[in-house]
Length: 346
Image (cartoon, rainbow, N blue to C red; front, side, top):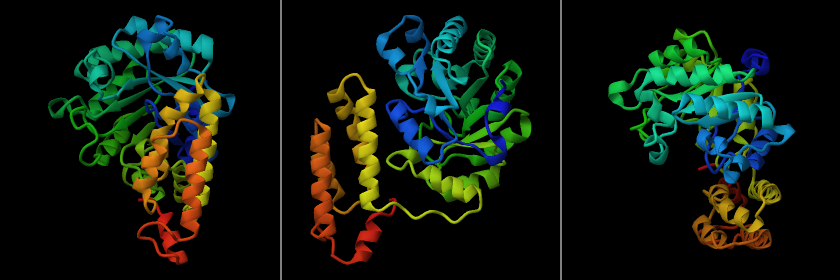
């Protein structure tokens, strides 16, 4: 099956971006429930896969409810990337393999992985050809606009990827040296869309449903990938779908719903992980995102960053909710307008 047959391109599919430490299986399922059409695993080291590293292989687990799902791999050795792709396909059976040419993290780049590969487009092409030849499922890529300003040329990068066999390309229009600073140059997504014949997925600075609609309007992209905008906000997919389909935007979840979603996410994370205590500790970052913008949110986060069990988490959130309903939080009046304002995304 090709990527054009696998993904519903006519409705502008919404992707959950691969994000280390964030897009684990429980969060992918949650975002699917809120309207994400496609999800991608956390990026996984090809070398770790080939060596059979136990922790690395844990990242590859997924639930059937997550389909269509891609597994994203990174590395700088075409042969090892091909071996890893073949193993992932045969052992886990995802719907497509995605190659990471975009990660800007130093420990990845120093091994020439992620966006480090963009310094050598011949290497990029060899990696894509090797991976595409290793499995019968589609190969897609995620790239940045270049490694630095001197190498910034997203159209050339896209043409190289297409020629090498990539069936779709996702562009985050920043360079590696930009990291996440400044504004994503959406005009580069538009230029890439005009240059290639494969589907183009736009990524970068999507924080609301309106942003998703504006990206499609300004770039003509085939799909939209949401990354940091989903942190503590999985309902952004519900909003984006409504905006793209010309429907009224759904109301923001109130504090009660926000906490319900948070706890559901936490329970699924604990159930999925082998070590429940470790799962709670790693979930603390999500607690910070879910409580962003709430009255006395900083005080609440200080409490939540100390929890070591789901019971403590529930207790802290329930205590906050009681004070919230009573209007007793610092700087908060008891009027309903203040409660409504508190639920607005910051």
